[in-house]
Amino acid sequence: MRQAPANVLNVIEPVVESLGYELVGVEYLTQGRDGLLRVYIDAEDGIRVEDCQRVSHQLSGVLDVEDVIKGHYSLEISSPGLDRPLFSAAHFARFAGSEVKLRLDAPLNGRRKFRGTLIGVEDGEVRLLMDGEEVRVPLASIDRANLVPQF
Image (cartoon, rainbow, N blue to C red; front, side):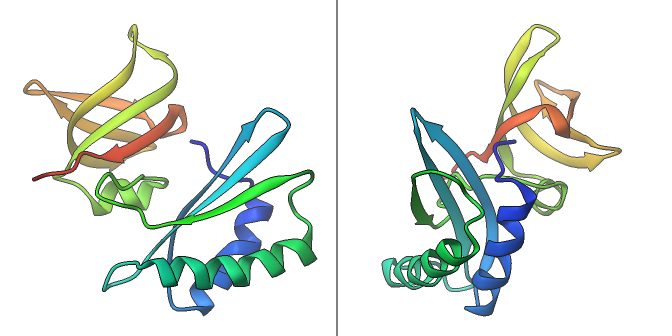
């Protein structure tokens, strides 16, 4: 998955949690010579723009001091939204029963994209129900995973 390196997570997580938010996940994407550090936060009563601003202000200072990301990058703070990204085995377990979309970093049985009902995670594999059959996808092979919004 496109998670940020552990040293970046180790700096971000205590800051986000000390402000009273849940750290959902962190992505680091390169865009040419620049990077984008996207931090997903959540709270029981949801996330507002003011929450994102508060976390951005605190994290900017800490990241500048710690200097864990080399080069120029933009910092983006976001709520997970309706199509919440899933980053960890705990996320896959928590949202069992939900519809998910997965994209793999390499094809598995000739396909990279999967969509189905999340059964859970077991032995390092995400279990999906697709067209009445169980499909197992190695967690380590997932590039991106999101819940499918239900309306």
